[in-house]
Image (cartoon, rainbow, N blue to C red; front, side, top):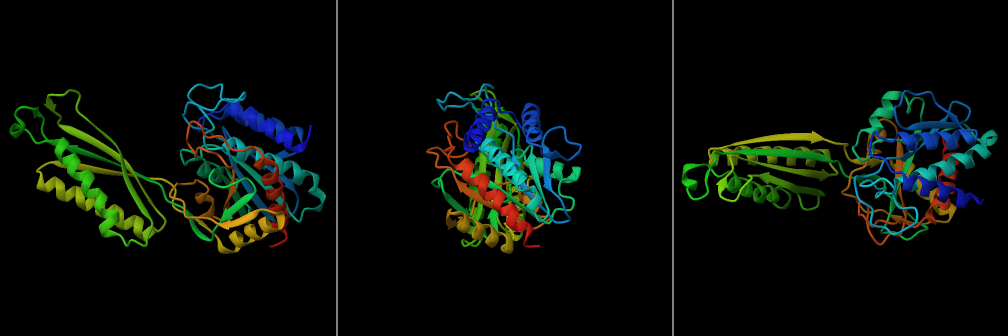
Length: 373
């Protein structure tokens, strides 16, 4: 079987057996088996799921990272290797990322005697719930690592296209919840209560003014209310309404300014309506910020490799790889996957032809990065 065919077969096997964050036990077993069969050494880290392999020797260490978890989505792609796990799908392409880094590991193993150091390949669990990077770091996966590189497939780019950027790339991901508490009443006698639905509606509208009226329009910021829940029948005003949403920015100062403004608006409306509004914030990863040197280097290697290179647009989505870049330098890149449907869509279907080229690129990137220290 050809090298490309092997990687595609691995991708399809992973695609048929997707597992959610922190449940990637069979995925981990498969990756371990494939790596060990190829003679890769595995680091003895304490990880319930996920694998860290290493090739080469010496003091210099460069890391490559793939993510291995799937999403709670019913697949809508008519392919022979569709998910066999109902309600779970590799709708973000982590099966592709894993096969790419498996391929890079095999290529690096072939060149092991010539490597100017060690390459560590991280197969990270739980990217989708933004917890996997911290787990790997706590287990020691970044110990001695000098630089780290990772990828995400980009459905909006053709196969053979590469994109990255220096500085901020992906956004921070914060979740917020607001509980509006008024006083319930019969819908025919609203004056006897304190309408939490009305206050929640005012709150949603007021929150949308933050990005348009409180933040410089040249800054990137998205604040979305994504869930409203209250009441259980048509003729009763509920006592409480819950709202939930997300905040995305690329700058810490903007992030802090928006959060203060949300808190101020909630406090002001609560006072005006003689009600209570409780605000809770759940911080996800901060913005992913590429290091200038390594982003430029990654793009130079992509040019040499034969990719069509572009300057990547800012992403408002989040990426757990950001956590690594807060500890060590490195760069995150996009590789074109040419899917009609985007990430997290039930019909997402990346072009598998990207896999071999990306595997060869990352093997070359790691090899050359070892020579840069």
